[in-house]
Image (cartoon, rainbow, N blue to C red):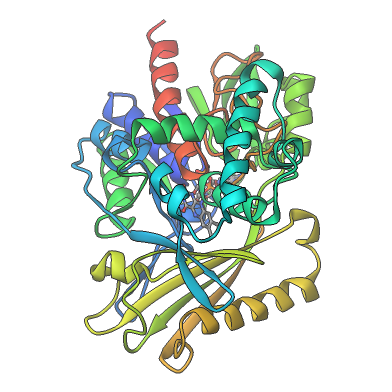
Length: 435
Ligand SMILES: Cc1cc2nc3c(=O)[nH]c(=O)nc-3n(C[C@H](O)[C@H](O)[C@H](O)COP(=O)(O)OP(=O)(O)OC[C@H]3O[C@@H](n4cnc5c(N)ncnc54)[C@H](O)[C@@H]3O)c2cc1C
């Protein structure tokens, strides 16, 4: 063996870095293996020409009451958040306030008076067909159950894309939507926040914790997990073997079977790894030589469903003084991710749409970064992939093999799932190691 540690974590994304930091901080020597040359995974932060770019939009749910704040506090940090401005919908060349509270739903111009009545019917339908008791349904099922008018269907699709990062009503889970609305009722005033100073501060804190009692090895792909006597005994990387007492696999579950022999996983888990469906999208980040708008909230468009933000209006430290940084995401169906022409066409349409929403943006553009992101959220919040249907945090078969990241049964959406899983996994690992 080339060495090892009490805990090995595979993957230095949000989930792996958080789990590694909390375990190292609790006194467990931890090594994090990362195949890339950088940490952060799908939240890899890049600084260019004085602009700090997250990988597309990266907002967090529920500010200081959310999972990001909880992880940072547990890692000895003092989380601080900024609030974006009110969200807006850009439709037919005009901006409308996006109703994000019950009172705003009554006032919104996005719904006709009759549709506002239909909204009450939708609430009644949801209460009657409570997805926790009656079984999950899709948003489209609920909308067709009340014969919803088009404007209400469109608004609900926007709600699902912001709350669940799922713009497809025929897939979006009512069970996840209900859970989100319950959380929102508990935190109505701060539904979304941006980490002050950008995500680098978060990763620096996690890194400091890990390096206080372990290390992060980048450019270190784990080729396989080694099993011995029914336990995860370590990993093999670059032909070397590293042993451990507990192993946290924090890679998206679609990749788990590349490193874990299926015979060590139960058939349902193997099935999940094979079928887990991510959300998929194209992103453009744009650096502007001058401000083009003072909007600082999320800008949503219904057709196609996209969302963007002039993120340096939320946190001015992300762009040099007098300049502006924006980012925009358009979802595309995962089934079309392999169609290069379709992806290219979508990227072009997205640029045109941003140009209409923010006149003058492309004249002021110093440079832009166009990304194709085949995995936005690792597990789309759809019927069949809800929180208790995703991968468990500990393997039912191998008791020292744990899972973290946004394809597990952590609660929330995207990054929050990864953070929630890390909080819970670090407790489970500590408990296991105490035995
Ligand atoms: C454009 C975009 C916008 C997003 N917006 C938001 C948002 O606003 N809010 C939000 O909450 N979430 C958002 N997300 C989702 C969020 O980024 C992810 O949920 C989160 O980063 C997932 O973290 P993770 O640790 O689970 O996985 P990952 O970030 O994928 O980390 C897994 C890591 O494992 C490494 N790895 C894989 N295989 C191996 C191996 N064999 N050996 C070693 N290392 C390996 C990978 O290189 C990677 O670094 C967005 C994502 C994207 C792409």
